[in-house]
Amino acid sequence: MGTRQSRSARVVFAARLRELREKRGFSQEGLAELADLHRTYVGSVERGERNISIDNMERLARALDVQLKEML
Amino acid sequence: MGTRQSRSARVVFAARLRELREKRGFSQEGLAELADLHRTYVGSVERGERNISIDNMERLARALDVQLKEML
Image (cartoon, rainbow over all chains, first blue to last red):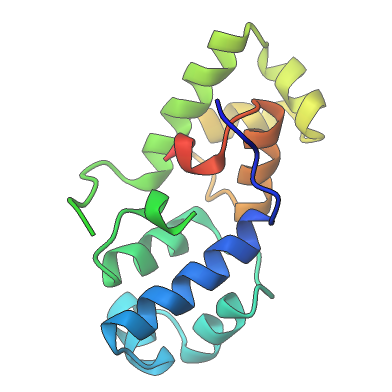
């Protein structure tokens, strides 16, 4: 239940991704390698340009050692 | 931080989707209409067959009146 988010999930995820990546001291390239994704893909997700899938969201969450729900 | 999920995000989301849909008393068809998605698509997401995108996850969460993170 509870209040709906006003910002879109995509925008929230993008901001959390950048925040957590920087907190870990990872470059986009380093995170991409850890998550087995392309570097330019990670950049476009951080800019909210990609309608990322749940499987790729999970790969990023695992690479950042957080639960996916903490990124939303 | 915290413990990683053992079940995949896709499987967790599928189970939560079904649980919340049934709790609301919606059919797959009714939920699909509310979320402006196809009925067969909702069924395949509930079976964990689809690598659903964040935009469609959000549509389902809104139709169910929950925050997306509550579905993960």
